[in-house]
Image: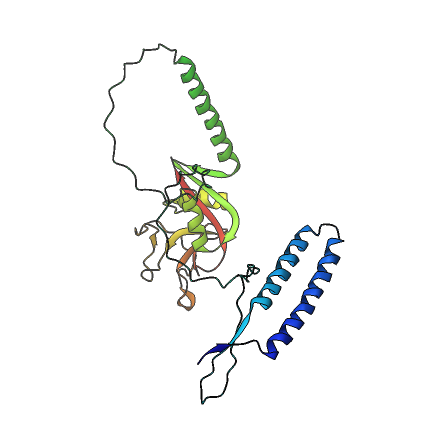
Length: 287
């Protein structure tokens, strides 16, 4: 057997709801007195009316089954309430897959970049074809007498310079010229100096050349004669055996076995001497 009835709890809720309605009405009255309160008045009025309607029409059902204790489930029925405020933003979802490339308009070409460093030089190219033969030039007649006269003048000037050198620094014998360095040095340095001047070390072939070398040196000087290859076998710098000699008394004596060069003494005689000693260099030139 099932029956409905209003319990003491329902009455107490109704009274408390009436008091709650009075509180809402008082709040509504206060809101009406404030500027810009039209929205709040409508909201509070609608809320209080809905609450009162729910409390008045609510019923409490109690199903009583014989032989079982009474239960009092409360079921509140009312009209749907207002939508609440939006909730907080949720967490970002997982990143989606990459979409297909768009079909946008291609942008403008950017400005050219800076010029890079020069690359290595390439291999030379193949030889080009031979060009066509040019036109024959015009023949120009000119007088060469002026050029010839200038050449003769230069030859004359060169001859005067040569005579001056012969008179001042050089002794001449036949087609040979002998010139002194006026500075002492070793045999190897004297040889290098004469070669640098496109000459050779003085090597007398007779008394006249020996006297010319003596006059230009005016001091002890190396001759272009040695026996470095074989003792007592004196040869010139080309390796030819010398036939003219003018040794001093008791020479050559090869003191201490180290005298392989020849020096011209002040009296015009020869003496074998160490090549490491320092004497003047006399160079020989030919026309």
